[in-house]
Image 1 (cartoon, rainbow, N blue to C red):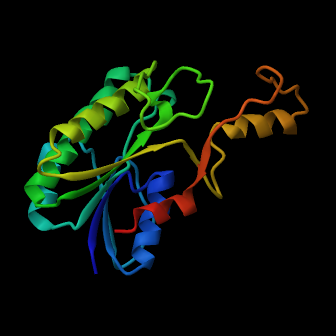
Image 2 (image 1 turned 30 degrees about the vertical axis):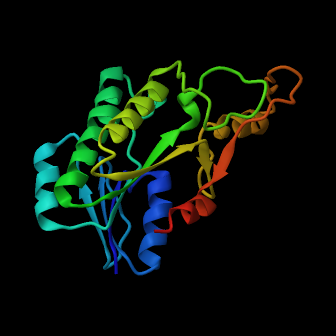
Length: 211
């Protein structure tokens, strides 16, 4: 049995990930600002903030982890205070990386974002494209990546620049589209309707994290 820490384990993707890891016979501890009603003998939920250093020190003293999945992040449309988003996504990421060092855990998986690119491209974006985010969420994720690179000699990090994650039970912003359809409203279309948007299926996504 491996011990895993998930930040944001009560969130949509965090929930998919934790259940998958627990079902495979691992122990999972989750830190999240929200309540979590998931129950399993191999799962523990800690309601708290990754900016709370006292809480992180307490967890570090009680548990040793084989890997950390850093999924926690505040989204721009969910917060009124942009400083709150920045400190959570940036300072919180720094705290988790330093936590990994103190805990002796050298494996950290960071869920970043394809919002690192805020401009249109005439071709597919590759890893060679230089990030250039235009809004605060993308900028906070890029800053989080920089923190991981600063600690690369002590923590082996893997960064996933994820598109929007969808799965059963979550429509997210797509719910607006279905509400328009349900209300028999006109649907706005950008250009001629041939624009493409990236999504990734959450249940399949977790298969990328086999350690």
